[in-house]
Length: 160
Image (cartoon, rainbow, N blue to C red; front, side, top):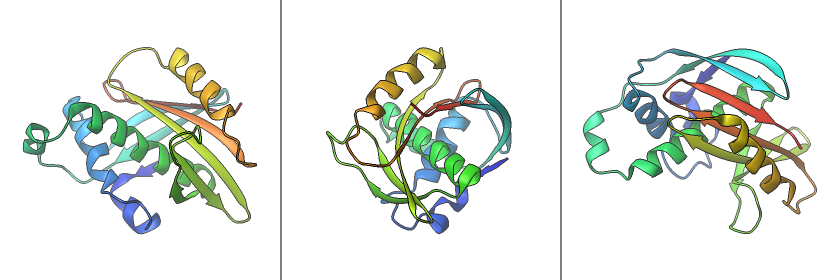
């Protein structure tokens, strides 16, 4: 499965910033070059992803908050993943208190997408936290939590 970060702005015109750049910076910061193979586990189903991005200028890391790079980079990878997996397209950023990051659309369905990113560490406990959060989303939509790790690239996703 291809997760093409440098095409995010074309596929998701509502994205307010260049998320693909943050995804590239987060991966390059951890020593990776495009493309990088990443295991993906979605509700127990094991997949393999190829994350692709345009090379980024690492000098930007001196001007950008490192946590922001991790968070926005994870959102880039997660949005690319749900698009590649099922054609979900970003409709709008959810507001604080709506218990998810993005409202995605696919044909006649909607999805509340909650994302978390980390440079390293265990993804399972973080996914459990994110699942508890997204289940609180009051919108009558499907729900999905996605956690992205950059040092050893991997994606863990689950629906409550």
